[in-house]
Length: 458
Ligand code: SUG
Image 1 (cartoon, rainbow, N blue to C red):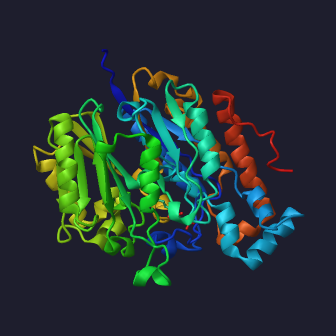
Image 2: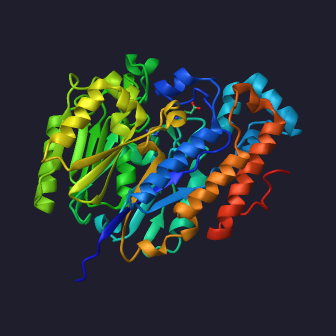
Image 3: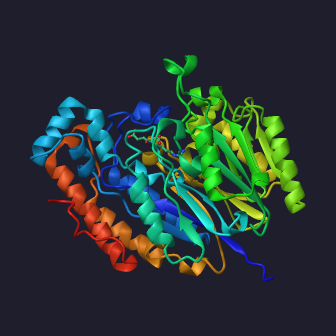
Protein backbone atom coordinates (compact mmCIF):
# COMPACT_ATOMS: atom_id res chain seq x y z
CA UNK A 1 0.00 0.00 0.00
CA UNK A 2 1.29 3.47 -0.85
CA UNK A 3 2.14 5.51 2.25
CA UNK A 4 0.90 9.05 2.15
CA UNK A 5 2.51 12.03 3.80
CA UNK A 6 0.34 14.37 5.77
CA UNK A 7 0.88 18.12 5.81
CA UNK A 8 -0.58 20.54 8.28
CA UNK A 9 -2.23 23.68 6.95
CA UNK A 10 -3.25 26.80 8.87
CA UNK A 11 -6.55 28.54 8.29
CA UNK A 12 -6.71 32.06 9.79
CA UNK A 13 -9.72 34.34 9.86
CA UNK A 14 -9.11 37.81 8.46
CA UNK A 15 -10.11 40.28 11.17
CA UNK A 16 -13.10 42.44 10.29
CA UNK A 17 -13.42 46.26 10.08
CA UNK A 18 -15.76 46.29 13.10
CA UNK A 19 -13.20 44.75 15.48
CA UNK A 20 -13.97 46.30 18.86
CA UNK A 21 -13.97 45.60 22.56
CA UNK A 22 -17.44 44.58 23.62
CA UNK A 23 -16.56 42.83 26.89
CA UNK A 24 -18.52 39.88 25.55
CA UNK A 25 -16.30 36.82 26.05
CA UNK A 26 -17.63 34.54 28.81
CA UNK A 27 -14.86 33.96 31.38
CA UNK A 28 -12.40 35.91 29.24
CA UNK A 29 -10.57 38.40 31.48
CA UNK A 30 -8.86 40.33 28.67
CA UNK A 31 -12.19 40.88 26.94
CA UNK A 32 -13.74 42.07 30.21
CA UNK A 33 -10.95 44.47 31.04
CA UNK A 34 -10.83 45.97 27.54
CA UNK A 35 -14.60 46.52 27.49
CA UNK A 36 -15.61 49.64 25.56
CA UNK A 37 -12.02 50.82 25.06
CA UNK A 38 -11.20 52.27 21.66
CA UNK A 39 -9.95 49.74 19.15
CA UNK A 40 -7.87 49.91 15.98
CA UNK A 41 -9.41 47.54 13.39
CA UNK A 42 -6.77 48.40 10.79
CA UNK A 43 -3.89 47.51 13.13
CA UNK A 44 -5.76 44.36 14.21
CA UNK A 45 -6.15 43.11 10.64
CA UNK A 46 -2.58 44.05 9.70
CA UNK A 47 -1.25 42.15 12.74
CA UNK A 48 -3.28 39.09 11.68
CA UNK A 49 -1.97 39.36 8.11
CA UNK A 50 1.61 39.71 9.38
CA UNK A 51 1.18 36.43 11.27
CA UNK A 52 -0.18 34.74 8.14
CA UNK A 53 2.81 36.09 6.23
CA UNK A 54 5.26 34.70 8.79
CA UNK A 55 3.65 31.23 8.69
CA UNK A 56 3.59 31.25 4.90
CA UNK A 57 7.25 32.27 4.78
CA UNK A 58 8.14 29.45 7.21
CA UNK A 59 6.63 26.98 4.76
CA UNK A 60 3.27 26.24 6.39
CA UNK A 61 0.52 26.24 3.73
CA UNK A 62 -1.48 29.23 4.93
CA UNK A 63 -5.14 29.85 4.08
CA UNK A 64 -7.52 32.61 5.12
CA UNK A 65 -11.24 33.01 5.60
CA UNK A 66 -12.69 36.43 4.76
CA UNK A 67 -14.55 38.46 7.40
CA UNK A 68 -18.25 37.88 7.97
CA UNK A 69 -20.70 40.70 7.23
CA UNK A 70 -21.25 42.87 10.29
CA UNK A 71 -23.47 44.34 11.61
CA UNK A 72 -25.40 41.14 11.22
CA UNK A 73 -28.61 42.69 9.90
CA UNK A 74 -30.69 39.52 9.53
CA UNK A 75 -29.93 38.72 13.18
CA UNK A 76 -30.76 42.24 14.39
CA UNK A 77 -33.98 42.19 12.39
CA UNK A 78 -34.95 38.81 13.84
CA UNK A 79 -34.63 40.45 17.26
CA UNK A 80 -37.10 43.16 16.27
CA UNK A 81 -34.76 45.92 15.09
CA UNK A 82 -36.52 46.33 11.79
CA UNK A 83 -37.38 49.35 9.65
CA UNK A 84 -35.10 52.25 9.00
CA UNK A 85 -31.57 51.02 9.66
CA UNK A 86 -30.15 54.25 11.05
CA UNK A 87 -32.98 54.30 13.52
CA UNK A 88 -32.67 50.59 14.31
CA UNK A 89 -29.00 50.98 15.22
CA UNK A 90 -29.73 53.84 17.60
CA UNK A 91 -32.65 52.00 19.20
CA UNK A 92 -30.58 48.89 19.71
CA UNK A 93 -27.67 50.88 21.17
CA UNK A 94 -29.98 52.70 23.59
CA UNK A 95 -31.88 49.59 24.66
CA UNK A 96 -29.02 47.11 24.74
CA UNK A 97 -25.51 48.16 23.72
CA UNK A 98 -24.44 44.56 24.38
CA UNK A 99 -26.81 43.29 21.71
CA UNK A 100 -25.50 45.78 19.16
CA UNK A 101 -21.93 44.92 20.09
CA UNK A 102 -22.71 41.21 19.57
CA UNK A 103 -24.28 41.94 16.16
CA UNK A 104 -21.16 43.88 15.17
CA UNK A 105 -18.51 41.61 16.70
CA UNK A 106 -15.46 40.48 14.73
CA UNK A 107 -14.97 37.45 17.01
CA UNK A 108 -15.09 35.16 13.96
CA UNK A 109 -11.39 36.03 13.59
CA UNK A 110 -10.50 33.33 16.15
CA UNK A 111 -10.79 30.34 13.84
CA UNK A 112 -9.42 27.89 16.43
CA UNK A 113 -13.04 27.97 17.57
CA UNK A 114 -14.56 27.49 14.12
CA UNK A 115 -14.43 23.67 14.00
CA UNK A 116 -12.78 20.48 15.24
CA UNK A 117 -10.85 18.48 12.66
CA UNK A 118 -9.70 14.88 12.24
CA UNK A 119 -7.55 13.90 9.25
CA UNK A 120 -8.51 10.99 7.08
CA UNK A 121 -5.75 8.76 8.50
CA UNK A 122 -7.48 8.89 11.93
CA UNK A 123 -11.05 8.10 11.00
CA UNK A 124 -13.11 4.93 10.55
CA UNK A 125 -14.25 5.81 7.05
CA UNK A 126 -10.89 7.37 6.10
CA UNK A 127 -12.45 10.70 5.38
CA UNK A 128 -11.14 14.07 6.55
CA UNK A 129 -13.82 15.23 8.96
CA UNK A 130 -14.64 18.73 10.20
CA UNK A 131 -17.34 19.54 12.72
CA UNK A 132 -18.12 23.28 12.85
CA UNK A 133 -18.53 24.52 16.42
CA UNK A 134 -21.92 25.83 17.51
CA UNK A 135 -20.33 28.40 19.90
CA UNK A 136 -23.74 28.66 21.48
CA UNK A 137 -22.80 29.82 24.95
CA UNK A 138 -21.76 33.25 23.66
CA UNK A 139 -24.35 35.54 22.13
CA UNK A 140 -21.85 37.11 19.73
CA UNK A 141 -20.08 33.90 18.72
CA UNK A 142 -23.10 31.70 18.03
CA UNK A 143 -23.77 33.91 14.99
CA UNK A 144 -20.58 32.73 13.28
CA UNK A 145 -21.36 29.06 12.97
CA UNK A 146 -23.33 28.67 9.76
CA UNK A 147 -21.33 31.22 7.76
CA UNK A 148 -18.07 29.61 8.81
CA UNK A 149 -19.51 26.18 7.96
CA UNK A 150 -20.26 27.45 4.47
CA UNK A 151 -16.82 29.00 4.07
CA UNK A 152 -15.17 25.75 5.20
CA UNK A 153 -17.36 23.84 2.75
CA UNK A 154 -16.18 26.15 -0.02
CA UNK A 155 -12.56 25.67 1.01
CA UNK A 156 -12.80 21.86 1.16
CA UNK A 157 -15.38 21.32 -1.61
CA UNK A 158 -13.03 19.64 -4.09
CA UNK A 159 -10.85 17.84 -1.54
CA UNK A 160 -11.30 14.09 -2.04
CA UNK A 161 -12.81 12.35 0.96
CA UNK A 162 -13.42 15.50 3.00
CA UNK A 163 -16.63 16.23 4.81
CA UNK A 164 -17.74 19.36 6.67
CA UNK A 165 -20.53 18.20 8.96
CA UNK A 166 -23.42 20.12 10.43
CA UNK A 167 -22.57 21.64 13.82
CA UNK A 168 -24.06 20.08 16.96
CA UNK A 169 -27.47 21.55 17.80
CA UNK A 170 -27.15 24.95 19.48
CA UNK A 171 -28.37 23.98 22.93
CA UNK A 172 -26.51 24.73 26.16
CA UNK A 173 -25.79 21.08 27.12
CA UNK A 174 -24.06 20.66 23.73
CA UNK A 175 -22.01 23.86 23.83
CA UNK A 176 -18.96 23.38 21.64
CA UNK A 177 -16.02 25.74 21.05
CA UNK A 178 -14.08 23.72 18.50
CA UNK A 179 -10.39 22.91 18.17
CA UNK A 180 -9.43 25.24 21.04
CA UNK A 181 -10.45 22.33 23.28
CA UNK A 182 -8.93 19.50 21.26
CA UNK A 183 -5.39 18.12 21.15
CA UNK A 184 -4.06 15.72 18.53
CA UNK A 185 -0.61 14.26 19.07
CA UNK A 186 0.96 12.23 16.29
CA UNK A 187 4.09 10.54 14.96
CA UNK A 188 6.59 12.14 12.62
CA UNK A 189 4.68 11.34 9.45
CA UNK A 190 1.48 12.66 11.01
CA UNK A 191 -0.14 9.31 10.29
CA UNK A 192 -0.70 7.75 13.70
CA UNK A 193 -2.35 9.88 16.31
CA UNK A 194 -4.31 9.99 19.55
CA UNK A 195 -6.85 12.63 20.50
CA UNK A 196 -7.51 14.41 23.78
CA UNK A 197 -10.80 16.28 24.19
CA UNK A 198 -10.92 18.84 26.98
CA UNK A 199 -14.21 19.98 28.52
CA UNK A 200 -15.31 22.26 31.32
CA UNK A 201 -16.90 21.23 34.61
CA UNK A 202 -20.66 20.64 34.47
CA UNK A 203 -22.78 23.79 34.66
CA UNK A 204 -26.26 22.34 34.10
CA UNK A 205 -28.74 22.56 36.96
CA UNK A 206 -26.13 24.27 39.05
CA UNK A 207 -28.15 27.25 40.25
CA UNK A 208 -26.45 30.58 40.52
CA UNK A 209 -22.75 31.28 39.91
CA UNK A 210 -22.07 27.79 38.56
CA UNK A 211 -21.95 26.09 41.94
CA UNK A 212 -19.95 28.83 43.62
CA UNK A 213 -17.56 29.23 40.72
CA UNK A 214 -16.84 32.44 38.86
CA UNK A 215 -17.22 31.28 35.28
CA UNK A 216 -18.93 28.46 33.45
CA UNK A 217 -17.05 25.99 31.29
CA UNK A 218 -17.64 26.85 27.65
CA UNK A 219 -17.21 23.30 26.35
CA UNK A 220 -19.51 20.58 27.69
CA UNK A 221 -18.39 16.97 28.11
CA UNK A 222 -21.39 15.84 26.10
CA UNK A 223 -20.39 18.11 23.22
CA UNK A 224 -16.81 16.78 23.26
CA UNK A 225 -18.10 13.21 23.14
CA UNK A 226 -20.58 13.97 20.34
CA UNK A 227 -17.94 15.79 18.30
CA UNK A 228 -15.53 12.86 18.74
CA UNK A 229 -18.28 10.51 17.56
CA UNK A 230 -19.07 12.66 14.50
CA UNK A 231 -15.36 12.78 13.64
CA UNK A 232 -15.33 8.97 13.60
CA UNK A 233 -12.01 8.69 15.38
CA UNK A 234 -11.33 5.15 16.64
CA UNK A 235 -12.65 4.68 20.16
CA UNK A 236 -9.30 3.43 21.42
CA UNK A 237 -7.58 6.65 20.31
CA UNK A 238 -9.93 8.93 22.20
CA UNK A 239 -9.27 10.47 25.60
CA UNK A 240 -11.39 12.95 27.53
CA UNK A 241 -10.34 15.18 30.38
CA UNK A 242 -11.93 17.94 32.43
CA UNK A 243 -10.37 21.36 32.85
CA UNK A 244 -9.80 22.40 36.44
CA UNK A 245 -12.25 24.86 37.98
CA UNK A 246 -9.21 26.75 39.25
CA UNK A 247 -8.00 27.33 35.68
CA UNK A 248 -11.40 28.42 34.39
CA UNK A 249 -11.80 30.83 37.29
CA UNK A 250 -8.34 32.24 36.55
CA UNK A 251 -9.51 33.12 33.01
CA UNK A 252 -8.69 29.92 31.10
CA UNK A 253 -11.87 29.88 29.04
CA UNK A 254 -10.38 27.55 26.42
CA UNK A 255 -7.85 24.78 26.81
CA UNK A 256 -5.48 26.36 24.28
CA UNK A 257 -4.77 29.03 26.90
CA UNK A 258 -3.17 26.41 29.18
CA UNK A 259 -1.70 23.68 26.98
CA UNK A 260 -0.17 23.34 23.51
CA UNK A 261 0.91 20.46 21.32
CA UNK A 262 2.50 19.61 18.04
CA UNK A 263 3.67 16.25 16.69
CA UNK A 264 4.68 14.14 19.68
CA UNK A 265 5.17 17.13 22.01
CA UNK A 266 2.59 18.13 24.61
CA UNK A 267 3.21 21.06 26.97
CA UNK A 268 0.66 21.69 29.72
CA UNK A 269 0.27 23.55 32.97
CA UNK A 270 0.05 21.80 36.31
CA UNK A 271 -3.48 23.19 36.79
CA UNK A 272 -4.75 22.50 33.26
CA UNK A 273 -6.56 19.20 33.83
CA UNK A 274 -8.27 17.27 36.61
CA UNK A 275 -6.36 14.05 37.43
CA UNK A 276 -3.80 14.99 34.83
CA UNK A 277 -1.23 12.38 35.90
CA UNK A 278 -3.60 9.51 35.21
CA UNK A 279 -5.02 10.91 31.98
CA UNK A 280 -1.65 11.89 30.51
CA UNK A 281 -0.20 8.50 31.48
CA UNK A 282 -2.96 6.64 29.58
CA UNK A 283 -2.61 9.00 26.62
CA UNK A 284 1.16 8.42 26.55
CA UNK A 285 0.76 4.68 26.86
CA UNK A 286 -1.69 4.49 23.97
CA UNK A 287 0.54 6.82 21.96
CA UNK A 288 3.51 4.54 22.56
CA UNK A 289 1.64 1.37 21.65
CA UNK A 290 0.41 3.01 18.44
CA UNK A 291 3.57 4.72 17.29
CA UNK A 292 6.40 3.04 19.16
CA UNK A 293 7.46 6.55 20.07
CA UNK A 294 7.65 8.39 23.34
CA UNK A 295 5.06 11.12 23.84
CA UNK A 296 7.21 13.99 25.00
CA UNK A 297 5.30 15.73 27.77
CA UNK A 298 6.40 18.89 29.55
CA UNK A 299 4.55 19.82 32.68
CA UNK A 300 4.87 23.50 33.61
CA UNK A 301 4.46 23.95 37.34
CA UNK A 302 2.72 26.81 39.11
CA UNK A 303 6.06 27.84 40.56
CA UNK A 304 7.59 28.08 37.07
CA UNK A 305 4.66 30.03 35.65
CA UNK A 306 1.60 30.96 37.67
CA UNK A 307 -1.85 30.53 36.18
CA UNK A 308 -2.25 34.31 36.29
CA UNK A 309 0.99 34.85 34.36
CA UNK A 310 -0.04 32.17 31.85
CA UNK A 311 -3.32 34.01 31.24
CA UNK A 312 -1.62 37.41 31.07
CA UNK A 313 1.10 36.35 28.61
CA UNK A 314 -0.69 33.59 26.66
CA UNK A 315 2.51 31.53 26.48
CA UNK A 316 0.43 28.36 25.96
CA UNK A 317 -1.41 30.06 23.12
CA UNK A 318 1.79 30.18 21.12
CA UNK A 319 1.75 28.31 17.84
CA UNK A 320 4.00 25.28 17.79
CA UNK A 321 4.89 24.31 14.25
CA UNK A 322 7.23 21.92 12.52
CA UNK A 323 8.40 22.33 9.01
CA UNK A 324 11.08 19.81 10.00
CA UNK A 325 10.01 17.21 12.64
CA UNK A 326 13.36 17.52 14.42
CA UNK A 327 13.17 21.28 14.69
CA UNK A 328 9.96 22.80 15.95
CA UNK A 329 9.35 26.53 16.04
CA UNK A 330 7.34 28.50 18.55
CA UNK A 331 5.37 31.60 17.59
CA UNK A 332 4.73 33.48 20.83
CA UNK A 333 2.80 36.62 21.61
CA UNK A 334 5.05 39.62 22.22
CA UNK A 335 3.73 39.70 25.81
CA UNK A 336 5.88 36.62 26.60
CA UNK A 337 9.06 38.58 25.89
CA UNK A 338 8.20 40.98 28.71
CA UNK A 339 7.67 38.17 31.22
CA UNK A 340 10.67 36.91 33.19
CA UNK A 341 9.13 33.47 33.97
CA UNK A 342 8.03 32.97 30.35
CA UNK A 343 11.47 33.83 29.02
CA UNK A 344 13.08 31.50 31.56
CA UNK A 345 10.85 28.64 30.39
CA UNK A 346 11.41 29.34 26.71
CA UNK A 347 15.17 29.52 27.25
CA UNK A 348 15.13 26.21 29.15
CA UNK A 349 13.29 24.57 26.23
CA UNK A 350 15.78 25.91 23.71
CA UNK A 351 18.76 24.89 25.85
CA UNK A 352 17.46 21.34 26.30
CA UNK A 353 18.89 19.26 23.46
CA UNK A 354 16.11 16.69 23.87
CA UNK A 355 13.44 19.34 23.35
CA UNK A 356 12.42 19.64 19.67
CA UNK A 357 11.78 23.41 19.96
CA UNK A 358 14.72 25.09 18.27
CA UNK A 359 13.52 28.54 17.31
CA UNK A 360 11.23 31.22 18.73
CA UNK A 361 9.43 34.09 17.02
CA UNK A 362 7.63 36.85 18.89
CA UNK A 363 4.60 38.42 17.25
CA UNK A 364 2.78 41.59 18.12
CA UNK A 365 -0.93 40.76 18.13
CA UNK A 366 -1.96 43.39 20.65
CA UNK A 367 -5.41 44.12 19.23
CA UNK A 368 -6.38 40.45 19.31
CA UNK A 369 -4.69 39.83 22.67
CA UNK A 370 -6.68 42.64 24.26
CA UNK A 371 -9.78 40.56 23.47
CA UNK A 372 -8.26 37.30 24.74
CA UNK A 373 -6.97 35.86 21.44
CA UNK A 374 -3.31 34.94 20.85
CA UNK A 375 -1.51 33.37 17.87
CA UNK A 376 -3.04 29.89 18.26
CA UNK A 377 -6.58 31.29 18.65
CA UNK A 378 -6.29 32.90 15.24
CA UNK A 379 -5.71 29.65 13.36
CA UNK A 380 -7.46 26.37 12.68
CA UNK A 381 -5.16 23.46 11.84
CA UNK A 382 -5.97 20.62 9.48
CA UNK A 383 -3.77 17.78 8.23
CA UNK A 384 -4.20 16.71 4.63
CA UNK A 385 -2.63 13.89 2.68
CA UNK A 386 -0.47 14.64 -0.34
CA UNK A 387 -3.37 13.56 -2.54
CA UNK A 388 -5.82 15.91 -0.79
CA UNK A 389 -3.66 19.01 -0.40
CA UNK A 390 -3.66 20.19 -4.05
CA UNK A 391 -7.48 20.20 -4.08
CA UNK A 392 -8.09 22.89 -1.48
CA UNK A 393 -9.80 25.91 -3.02
CA UNK A 394 -6.83 28.07 -4.03
CA UNK A 395 -8.87 31.25 -3.77
CA UNK A 396 -8.44 31.01 0.00
CA UNK A 397 -4.67 30.54 -0.17
CA UNK A 398 -2.89 33.30 1.75
CA UNK A 399 0.39 33.39 -0.13
CA UNK A 400 2.58 36.47 -0.30
CA UNK A 401 0.67 37.95 -3.27
CA UNK A 402 -2.72 37.47 -1.63
CA UNK A 403 -1.48 38.88 1.69
CA UNK A 404 -0.16 41.94 -0.07
CA UNK A 405 -3.51 42.50 -1.83
CA UNK A 406 -5.47 42.00 1.40
CA UNK A 407 -3.08 44.41 3.12
CA UNK A 408 -3.90 47.07 0.55
CA UNK A 409 -7.63 46.52 0.98
CA UNK A 410 -7.30 46.76 4.77
CA UNK A 411 -5.26 49.93 4.51
CA UNK A 412 -7.79 51.45 2.18
CA UNK A 413 -10.97 50.46 3.98
CA UNK A 414 -10.40 49.81 7.67
CA UNK A 415 -10.64 52.57 10.28
CA UNK A 416 -7.63 53.10 12.53
CA UNK A 417 -9.78 54.14 15.47
CA UNK A 418 -13.14 52.88 16.59
CA UNK A 419 -14.95 54.05 19.71
CA UNK A 420 -17.68 51.94 21.24
CA UNK A 421 -20.33 54.55 20.43
CA UNK A 422 -19.35 54.44 16.73
CA UNK A 423 -21.31 51.18 16.60
CA UNK A 424 -24.55 53.20 16.61
CA UNK A 425 -23.58 55.23 13.52
CA UNK A 426 -25.21 54.20 10.25
CA UNK A 427 -22.34 55.68 8.22
CA UNK A 428 -19.89 53.46 10.09
CA UNK A 429 -22.15 50.40 9.61
CA UNK A 430 -22.40 51.12 5.87
CA UNK A 431 -18.70 51.77 5.49
CA UNK A 432 -17.90 48.45 7.25
CA UNK A 433 -20.31 46.67 4.95
CA UNK A 434 -18.61 48.16 1.91
CA UNK A 435 -15.22 47.15 3.28
CA UNK A 436 -16.32 43.51 3.65
CA UNK A 437 -17.93 43.63 0.20
CA UNK A 438 -14.63 44.85 -1.28
CA UNK A 439 -12.82 41.89 0.31
CA UNK A 440 -15.53 39.43 -0.75
CA UNK A 441 -15.37 40.73 -4.32
CA UNK A 442 -11.63 40.32 -4.37
CA UNK A 443 -11.59 36.86 -2.80
CA UNK A 444 -14.70 35.74 -4.69
CA UNK A 445 -12.96 36.50 -7.94
CA UNK A 446 -10.39 33.82 -7.08
CA UNK A 447 -12.39 31.24 -5.19
CA UNK A 448 -15.75 31.58 -6.96
CA UNK A 449 -17.65 31.57 -3.69
CA UNK A 450 -18.37 35.07 -2.41
CA UNK A 451 -20.99 37.12 -4.09
CA UNK A 452 -22.08 40.54 -2.96
CA UNK A 453 -25.29 40.39 -4.97
CA UNK A 454 -27.17 39.00 -2.01
CA UNK A 455 -29.04 41.58 -0.02
CA UNK A 456 -26.43 42.88 2.35
CA UNK A 457 -27.04 46.57 1.92
CA UNK A 458 -30.65 47.00 0.86
O1 SUG B 1 -14.39 33.64 22.51
N1 SUG B 1 -12.95 36.85 22.54
C1 SUG B 1 -12.89 35.45 22.14
C2 SUG B 1 -11.46 34.97 22.19
C3 SUG B 1 -11.32 33.59 21.58
C4 SUG B 1 -9.98 33.02 21.76
N2 SUG B 1 -9.91 31.76 21.16
C5 SUG B 1 -9.19 30.71 21.62
N3 SUG B 1 -8.73 30.65 22.82
N4 SUG B 1 -9.01 29.70 20.81
C6 SUG B 1 -13.78 34.58 23.03
O2 SUG B 1 -13.86 34.86 24.24
C7 SUG B 1 -14.09 38.96 22.87
C8 SUG B 1 -15.08 39.78 22.09
C9 SUG B 1 -15.41 41.07 22.76
O3 SUG B 1 -15.40 41.16 23.98
O4 SUG B 1 -15.72 42.04 22.03
C10 SUG B 1 -14.11 37.50 22.42
O5 SUG B 1 -15.10 37.03 21.94
